[in-house]
Length: 168
Image (tube, helix red, strand yellow):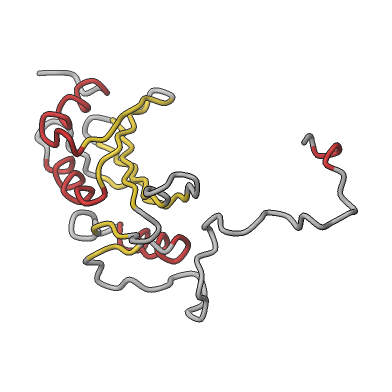
């Protein structure tokens, strides 16, 4: 039997999903794979049910916003863990800010429910098929998503700040 490592996991993913695996990199020993947003749930289910990888735990699911990444401004980052193999894997799926839709993982991992609601609340990513997609931490009246990088961090008109004192 092949050892569970990054090379094995990447080869298995590429053999199953081919062109839907858009890229990969290894950071600090952890494999990160980018897949098409449409295939995210299918990839997650396959990882969970794979006879060797058995990624049986969704550690985390969160959103990211890269405003300069045209056509792929919003993304979902999944962290999977195999308890049997003590192996971790990160999967990323990106979508357009104009159509921020990714399939839900609630049918694959029950723990995805609240994490997807939080990601929707803060980034506005719509999880298709989610059983109860509504705000979880912010007020329902909010008409924006606060973790998107749509506003300046500081007031540029302030005269009382000198950037030399802040290492800029």
